[in-house]
Length: 133
Ligand SMILES: [Zn+2]
Image 1 (cartoon, rainbow, N blue to C red):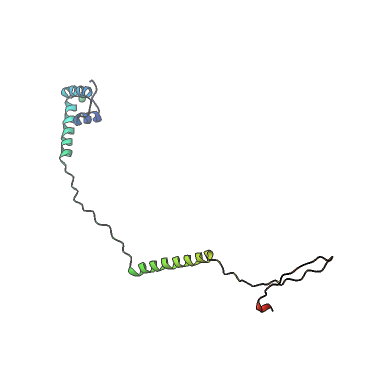
Image 2: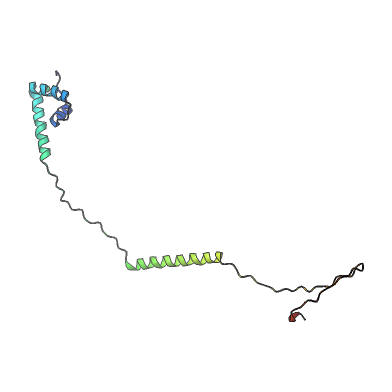
């Protein structure tokens, strides 16, 4: 390898993520090039430092503030729901319930037919209510 490998390639070499063929070429170059060997050693030290860091997750998550409604608000909402429900039921009941029908009693008093052309008409006696007599 005549040219120096770039930083990413050296980092992949230090992390041992290169293919076997690519790693062999870099190993050969690093063995012969003092500058690249120094860069790889520095990268390996930094990787070692990063590996020794232990994350500290001691930060406690504070509980969320609980929203509690004051008691008059709860009762006012419940009362409003009841009133709205009552009014809806009342308005619906007017549509569902039939209106009362006024019944007027009517009686038809049969009239004797007019005498025409001598045709015989027989009438049976009817029973009229006492109010009409
Ligand atoms: Zn080099």
